[in-house]
Length: 101
Image 1 (cartoon, one colour):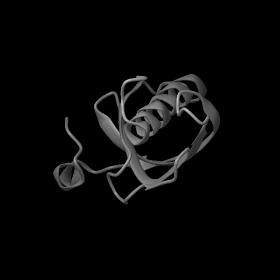
Image 2 (tube, one colour; image 1 turned 120 degrees about the vertical axis):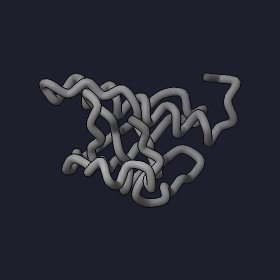
Image 3 (tube, helix red, strand yellow; image 1 turned 135 degrees about the horizontal axis):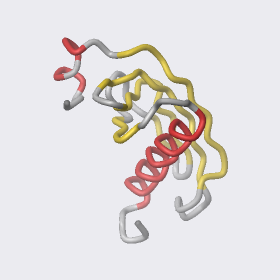
C-alpha cells in the first residue's frame, strides 16, 4: 500500500474501510468490492474523499453507497469514516456504471 501514489492509496484505504464497516455493522451483508465513482464522481483533497455515488457488491447484488472518508497525512490510516447504504442497483444498470457480476 505504501508504494501506491497518495491519491490511489487514499481511495484504496477508504474503499477498504467501507468494506470492513459494512461487513461488521450490517448483518447478512458480505461486501467484496466497492466502486467509488459508479454513479457520481468522487471529490478528493490530499487526505479526504467523498464518494456520493459509490456502489458495493454483496452476495451477487450491487447496492448504492455514499461515504465520506478522512485519512492521516500519509493516507495510510483512517481518521473518520461515515457511510450510508442505499437501495439495490437493478441488474439493467450494472454495465453502464462499471459494475460487474
